[in-house]
Length: 195
Image (tube, rainbow, N blue to C red; front, side, top):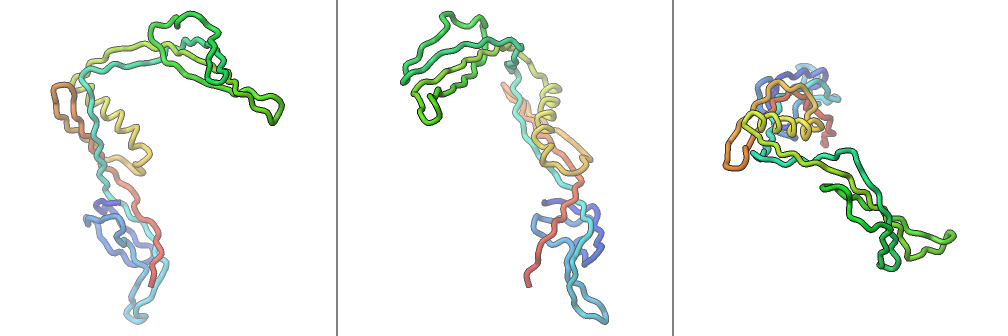
């Protein structure tokens, strides 16, 4: 990864960078080529520890007004049958819920093992939802952006976060929030060197 070296310890091999150096992905950090005063040039399996400060930047747009939908836990099931694209419903009335999400599941009927019929049983499940209007001010927009960024970056970051900062630009309808993470990570990987 691109970053700035904070620690390098070559246990075997020659360190090619030092603390404070900027490195890019693909740079050789510890070389397997060594040279001794009496032995000349020779090669070893290089290894060691290389830590670097990595910067991650995440941008989130947080609307000033947001409608949040959540399920209440209540649901209702209905069944119908579909024969050659002709559907027969086993229910007459509309949903008892004012607002809901709908999930469909279908299962094809078969007769014996090898004879499939063009008949499907369709299960319709309605999940009641409630809607809540949330108004974000600058502070809550920052908190929401950090939470979203943390969720998205937690699988990418493999180290210790040493600093987290935010920059907010307010627009008419939304906040544009940049979240910057500074992380100390082990960045070395073993690569085969071709001669």
